[in-house]
Image (cartoon, rainbow, N blue to C red; front, side, top):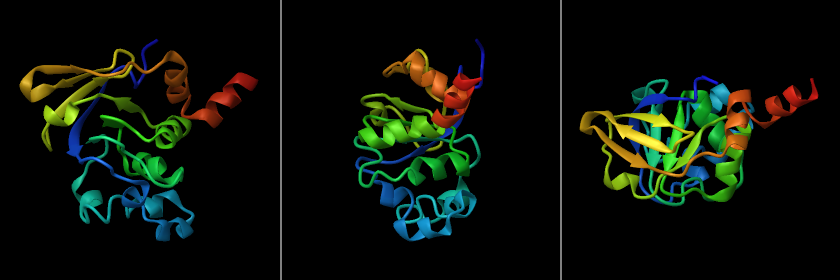
Length: 168
């Protein structure tokens, strides 16, 4: 089955280790209750101009322990809302990783990727095979394959949409 998750292509927005949910979206913006308004403040603490500089379809690539901190679902949600097509990290906090799939945001684990990639490069990602190709270097890096069950959540648009499809 071909779908938008067979291959994701985007420009890299590179981050380091230990990016926590408060750095992705500060708690003070949760009271906005509107994801499009919250998304305007994505990464505001660590990159004040992130939202103005990024383009829809960009890919966030980070080091270890991405999404640590609180278990807020708003963190992956604002990334999706602002137009990030995929998050790749050397490792994720477990709750962020699961929340990403629950809301339909692809998350791929690729140990050591930050040693191979630079800000602004273009990557092509195959989630099912766990492959990341750096276009400028003609280099492929293999990460963890995303299990079929998780791919089905992404294809449906998240856990709620998947569940509704199962009820039909």
